[in-house]
Length: 243
Image (tube, rainbow, N blue to C red; front, side):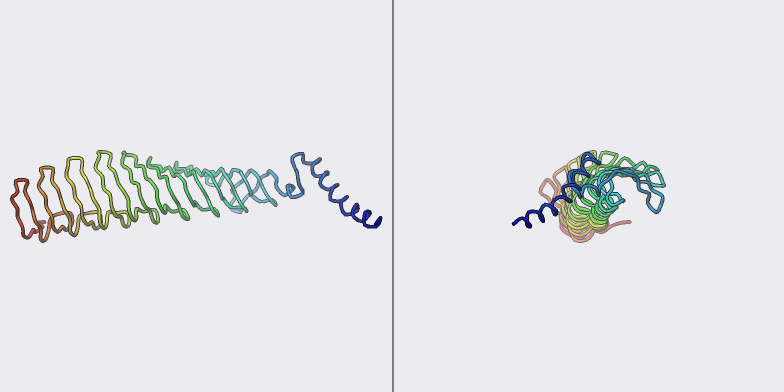
């Protein structure tokens, strides 16, 4: 029985001494593993300089990097890469991103402030606007909807500063597919779009109460259509675009 007691004492003693020594030397260290995290400076291969929390001699945790072109990043790192929340300032372009990062790329939710005074708040994927987000334009216009490869793609609503509004489909940053636009003067179009203009079949309601239902081409009435006047009179026939 005595042999077991002596053996346990010898096993426990080195661990206890090491932990106590670490606590005395570092003050805030509470375990052996805490020794791996330090505060320091790290220089990347391209000459950029990082100051902040480090693990095993590389950026890990919160810190700030000043790049050779004078851009700055202040936020979180994981295994030597920007990961988590961070703020990147593009000094020359006078632009700024605030939001989430993953493996050195903009990923997740964040806000980008452009040099032209536009700013976007929403989802990102590998440095591209991807998913749902809102673009606030410097002139007062606003787009709320889906994005792909930093372009409006899918369903979205664009509201002009004068009150005009389009709700519908987008493709490659342009109105395309089914959509409705309502102008502030009371006019309304509900139908198909192509390359940002009315093309295909649609219904156009005038502020006067007149209604046109029929075909469109390059934003003008072209093809078969029915025009109903507010008096009840009706024209049904062909419309031809005149260039």
